[in-house]
Image (cartoon, rainbow, N blue to C red; front, side, top):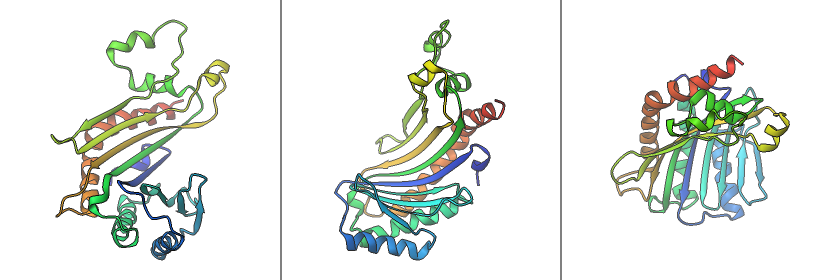
Length: 247
């Protein structure tokens, strides 16, 4: 397993399935689906509905670990905060993908996009955008802005999306999300909030006749881990972690 737990305060491994058609929202269907998931994971006992109408089933957050599952109008999300191993998170995601065809009537044709997402949180009390600028740098063409006398960085959230093959149906996206605003910079009063790094590998479009949700997710995981090793861990995650440890 890659050393994710040593790279951030918290990390998570999530699966998102976006559908072309609206998902079922009937009481019997939703409760039956969540009860089936709960059979495998009895600690997922907190069920509620958000104001948006999303349905959520989750564990208590104990020991820094938490499983959760949500159903939105056109998206199914499965997440695991600080999983002991990625395999345990994958087992949960694969269970969801195994159940949805016959319990939620989701077919491979209905797939708008399937995501394998890794997220990393870094708590920091200060100007998030300035920290990200200092640690990761800015493109050479913009460097003069970062060094203007008396200037304060207000919004710097690097993002990059790549097509991983010619059809552009499989893509990878890296995003650094900051949470500092102008009011905080003006007053120089910063709450302790998270800087988050998201790395997503996504498969767009309906799956082929011989493909499956589970096999596709496994492929996305392999590709994610290869790209993390090559382009993300030493270039983004470890520098942020080391910078925060030294402050």
